[in-house]
Figure 1: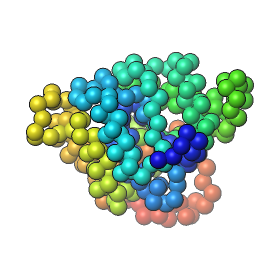
Figure 2: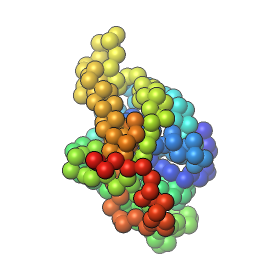
Figure 3: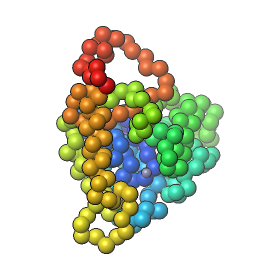
Length: 248
Ligand SMILES: [Zn+2]
């Protein structure tokens, strides 16, 4: 994996060490195959999790990073369960954006019912804007960067996707990246307490969701994103003549 200097094209910022895998792993795998440099930033080490230890979870995150072919996997070491929009968190995020210079950031949606996820989204949105302001955190010695584009992973039926990425060719690798988090998901042979995501049905539901979003664009599997800003389209014919599902 890359050094502390590695610049990347796309950065996925989520709260807990398996969140990026569950939401955008297929898209990260596809972008990697298209030649982009990809990274994941976890806000916490997931130490509040009912199952697993933070040391074990760090090893799982590295194995998942290898499967996803990430150029970098970073951790902001915010307190799990207590991720807040603080000046410290904003500044740390600005420093990552200025060092890594992602053109695009994927993160959660501001309406997410998990407080850590909602706070992560707000930290990312504010830091993305602040990273372009020359005087913000000037004493740290980094140059300002253009505001990266933000796309939010869609989970709610109340949020209409702005676009859906066809991940049909990357479903198996996405499953492997998720399964790398062995402490978190269903295993018949464990005595650890059952949680929402370790129930046998959770991964099945995730599968149905990928299939559903795929069906909206007429493919086998998809990941959905919401962009708050208007998309600047250069070639409307090229964009709109791609296969669509008129029943979506
Ligand atoms: Zn999470």
